[in-house]
Image (cartoon, rainbow, N blue to C red):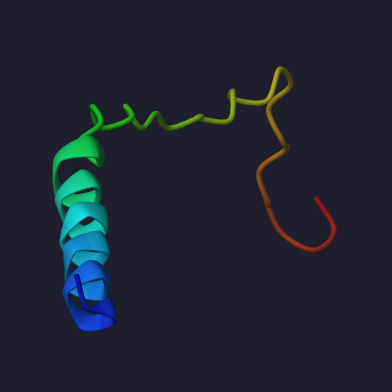
Length: 49
């Protein structure tokens, strides 16, 4: 066989493997929420109170 036919066959094989073998289950994403602070910050009541 000529080199071009072998090259096309090899390219087709690689494309088929890439198309069929690349299916994976999607990874579940999760969100990390910062916990609320233990102590409450004092509220602003004025300058000199």
